[in-house]
Image (cartoon, rainbow, N blue to C red; front, side):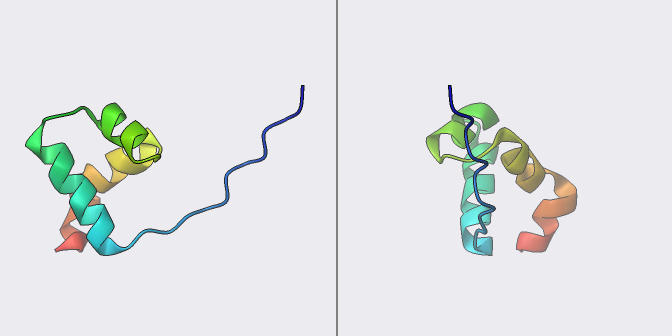
Length: 58
């Protein structure tokens, strides 16, 4: 069994982050579902949705 290589660090535009935050706040899907649907980590999505990060997107 081979080891998986770590995923390279990705960067996202503020517009993309804001779109994900808006979709999460609508409440149609859970953070986990959003993360999986956009190939993101749950941790990243939870960080973006947190108030301390979200205010920087405005």
